[in-house]
Image (cartoon, rainbow, N blue to C red):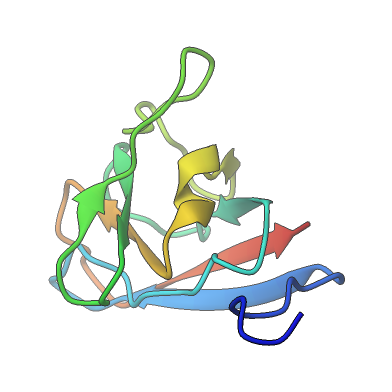
Length: 115
């Protein structure tokens, strides 16, 4: 329907985000057109705790709240493993992955979202 917002995506969408060398925040991605998703850490990653944050304006980010069966932050994370994005992530226009440890080199994280 015209004027009600954006169209919901029907096919899975694969995106990559990057945490810069020495940084903790990834570039942002847009989860609002989807209903669920995961992110996969690369084979070389620094640290074991990651948080998902979301934003309406792409500037001010807040930790995504979770329900009783979800985790955020994700603790004991391991390289090359896949983790679920909290359901509330998909209520915002922008989201990002945040490491608690600065990265020793640029790290690319794969994000897969679907309806």
